[in-house]
Image (cartoon, rainbow, N blue to C red; front, side, top):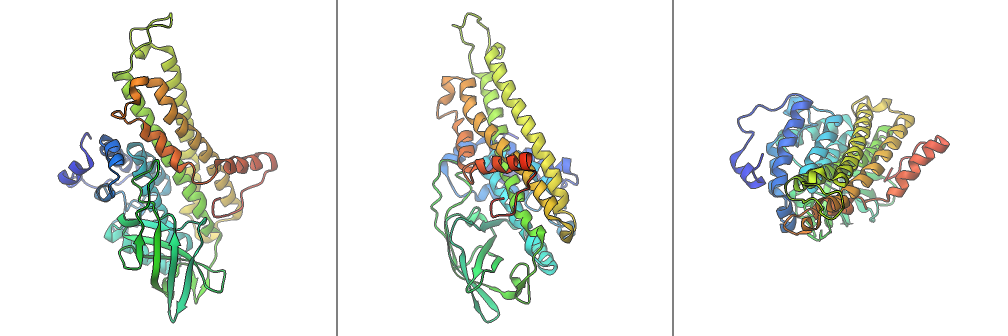
Length: 413
């Protein structure tokens, strides 16, 4: 589609269309959304407005409830499809690809750590209401402090990052119960007096992710809503440790989406505007005949295809685990999935950064104009690939290859 986000909201392009019923249909729908996002991605990035319209576009397209139960109006799709949709959305706008990816993770959080009753309640709530998730969970910060007040838990503290912040309907909190080492997750309404977003997200890229700081003041939940707790004691499963490899593959897929969008924009510019170089002794009539351009784009496309294939393979592997019996997961299955995802993460980091840089060499000096806006792809990739050091992902794969050692669960593994 060649309409902007605002035009799409006005025209409701899917209002008269049936909802997709297959994975292929949902991927087509995501491609339509990505096409809309790509039209004015640069302009929206520069304006840095709160992406309320973009999130509404995701809701209108039905993508927010992709993983939601069919009985509550969700699509009932698998994580294998969700990962591909994250990548597709990110090809149109890296920020919005990150938002939908984090949303899927936080929407699944109750399955990772919740009780069966909690899972049923949260999934019915967010699916029937078409709610969007944000999360204030950052292990590098001090934990939120949780105190008991009768049958309630009270959260207080500050987090440096809260992706989704004010454009979310529900926010995932995590803290430590005072006087214990018990970490407790909670899902709370975003719009309440005790949650104040600091509007301090002012970064090089991923500018529309609303990832700034947040203060939490006297946010209350009943003990019964403490995710994964029964009679105030945690029910711990290996399944709960899937949260980290799951989100690491979210990262990798929107990195690959950013690379895909950058490659698409670069080749489009080269076809339309890049001129052949007339001083090389092997003069060509058009840029499409230049051997160094063909070689350069061929290498980037090959690297992207290879990384996507590995991402899809890892996505299938972890999707099987995520949709299986929670009590059946073994540490060995979890570790194998984690190391495969570590391999994807490092390749996705490398290819997204290379595409973001190399497209300038392959489009020419005029493509560096701010009016063209090719810088958005490198800026977006560079910003989020700093989330956690990729060197540690290389080490995890190296330990597996050399020592047959699988990664141990941590807040980043």
